[in-house]
Length: 151
Picture 1 (spheres, one colour):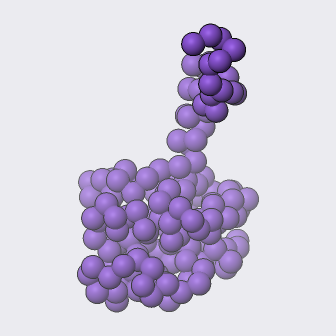
Picture 2 (tube, helix red, strand yellow):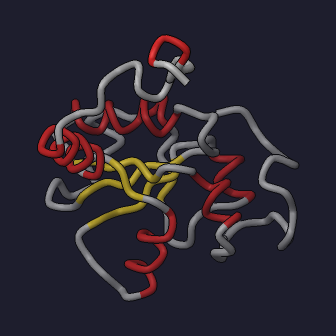
Picture 3 (tube, helix red, strand yellow):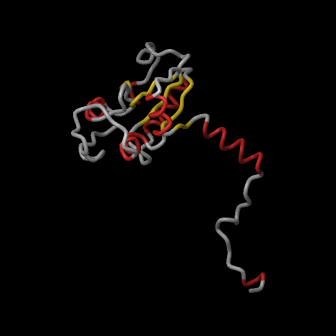
């Protein structure tokens, strides 16, 4: 095949970052994100220094949440509603799943209030998909979205 007949590449249309640019990008991403597996392992090991916050509605939290997670719905976050939290701890926010940006909005609000924060990517959906136990009224095996209340 000649160079002119080579198919166009959507992958390579935009040149890849240099290794150093890529390293900085991915480290920056990891500084604001975590995942269910890492949160679960740290909780299982009794690690301190972070607080898990479910930012969905009280009704959604009551049905199913990460064990020990606090419930602070994203729309209620303020200096008053977060006053009991220590700014020495990293706040880990989560909501429904990848299609929900409630935890992203809450993370931005926590940061604006002076907290260090990370978002648990995948939310409760991926927590459950990975087989981690939950607390709440939803019977074991109930699909995450079966009783979804709006956030």
